[in-house]
Amino acid sequence: MLERMTKDVDRRGFLRMVGAMSAAAAITGSVAACGGPSSTGGSTHSGSTPNAGGTIEAGISYTLSSGFDPMTSSGATPVAANMHVFEGLVDLDPVTREPYAALATAMPQRVDGTTYRVSLRKGATFHDGSAVTADDVVFSFTRILDPKNASLMVQFLPFLDSVRAVDASTVEFKLKYAFPLFPTRVSVVKIVPKKIVQADQKAFDAKPVGSGPYRLVEATKQDKIVFARWDKYNGSRPAKAAAMNWRLVDNNTARVNALVSGRVEAIEDVPYVDVATVKGKAETESVQSFGNLFLMFNYARKPFDDKRIRQALHYALDVDKIVTTAMYGQGIASTSYLQPSHPDYHRAATVYSHDPAKAKELLAAAGASGLKVTLTTTNTGWVNDIAPLIKESWDAIGVKTTLDVGESSGQYAKVDAGNFQVMAAPGDPSVFGNDADLLLSWFYGAGVWTTKRFRWAGSPQDVQVRGLLDQAARTSDQSARSRYWGQAIDVIADQAVLYPIVHRKLPTAWESAKLSGFKPLPTTGLSFLGVSTT
View 1 (cartoon, rainbow, N blue to C red):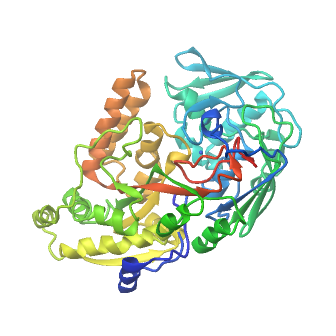
View 2 (cartoon, rainbow, N blue to C red):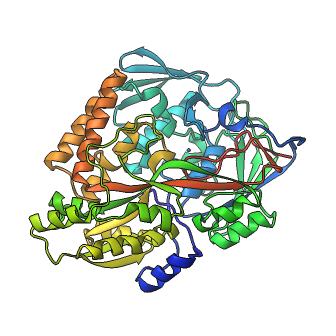
View 3 (cartoon, rainbow, N blue to C red):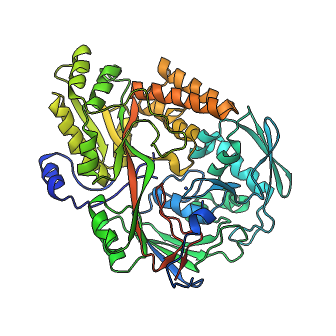
């Protein structure tokens, strides 16, 4: 599950008062995209000179929650690290999210409706000095397709039938059906060295070997990740610094202090409460993201199988108050599954404005007077700030609400066992890709969410949504594809089994006098592809 984790939020004023009165504890929480001229070629600081021998110092919000194997890794820190260590055949620019040929010499070429070929970049090498070959590419894809490997990425490749090496530098893909998004979707697969992974997968997971511009030198779970430039890299995104030290600083106050004191030159996830203060000391920008806070209902547990109950609890929410009070304006109320800045944004037919009277009417119509709800939440810092306001809104319409706050792993263990009523949690699959098919499939495709979490699988609406997604995936007509996605979003919004209440902004801060070409991301993490010290 993609969830952001933050710690030790300094809640001021109203938040301290509400937090003290509520049962919510302010502790931690968790989740979990590659650069080009447009994202890394920003203007340099006036009068600065790039220092090719410099070391980039960064403050990262999360400790290491998993290994680095790109087949299974979804933690915020390893995913961000992997974009510097690994390459796909195609990668996405971290800022613009536009695709570009990475290990491939060009975007995949279509041979026929269900066949594509890719040629590899000449002279590309892994960090052990071995050449990247077609066999490595085939291995990287087939290990993901193998069910016994339980890869996170397999859900994004339902169309892929087989992969074969045509020769040492050419790979051919056979699809089960025509999938027009194939040229960009291959970006979810990072190419790994077959020999090294087969020799010791666990060692590879702990200290990965890729073909990217930086190689990983060491990683200490609660402390730091150290990178060094890979001098044999010959792709389009070379490292412009000699090394990087990522300090893993999950304490919000300590991370801000590290930037202000000059210990680091960039930090992600500036606490909302500190954005105004940090702006006076460093370049600070908040980027609108797909990342959201959603409500998820246990469809298998009455009365939450009744959409009137689900809709009522959405209409009860004062989302404007949540955004202004808990998020300091760093978010927008959701009017769709997608945020308005997304290229395929479609305003949903059902938009949940703050309407307590309508919420009460729906509850009464459903015979749910005296409803008691336990709201399960992860202890992510910004979610902890919002949870008391959700309780306040629901209490105001007569729904007695109890907050159940805990570590992400424990809370999802309850969810997977079916021991929950309603969950509020953060999610952001956009780190893996930005097309609407991928974003919708993450929660609503055939997978763990519909079957083990909100337990919607097999319902008429679930079948309808999957049918619309399948129609969209198989059409080459962009307008028709957008129409199918819009129809799916309308059903998802109306049913509200899992649906966002707010899409958040991601504040990033950096020393523009010390970093040349740095840009903040619309996803979790930091990117230093093409960034130099000065």
